[in-house]
Image (cartoon, rainbow, N blue to C red; front, top):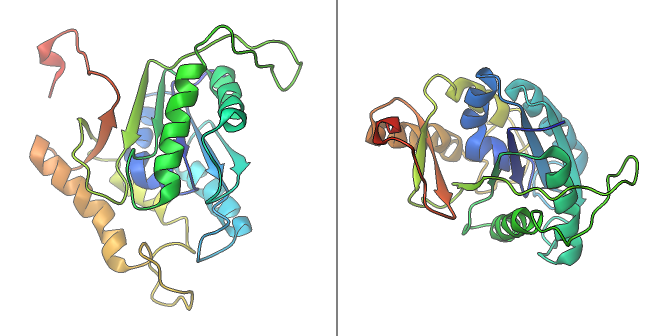
Length: 240
């Protein structure tokens, strides 16, 4: 299956928090979108790998993505090395996305910056002819593929975006997908330990960050991304 967008996150819920509304908007326009989680989030303070598996499946259904899979890299301990890069290259060549979304380049959680660089490097290497990888099904050789764009969504830190997407009308879908992770976010009845993302302030911040970015560009809600190379348009009138 060829994808228009492949969204990759170090942990289940990273994608929903970072670019869930953008994905929902593109899916509504007929784009094929897939999600890859690098780890099962097994080191998370709240919940278990098994509950995160179930929550991520529910979130995927809410967003309406074409597929979701998990690389099962070690939470907290995966590294950006040849072995991990090759596993991701196989996925990039399998799904041939035009656009890849991935973790913030710099962030509070160490897996976010590691995941960001791992995905970015794999996207580049995937386009090199002399790196050999095989299809998992029939053992035939895969063709090189390099996405046209790699965008980094914004996470814990308020990083200045390079491009902002109008997601007005899609925040409800995003928030439903985020809150599908019932063990992770604010629940006044929960007896689980508190974490930086389990407060009501954090959940509220997902909406008010989108509202603030929307305010700046003159719409109701927006999501921001950073880029690795210049953005280009064929007409200045393509900008809103």
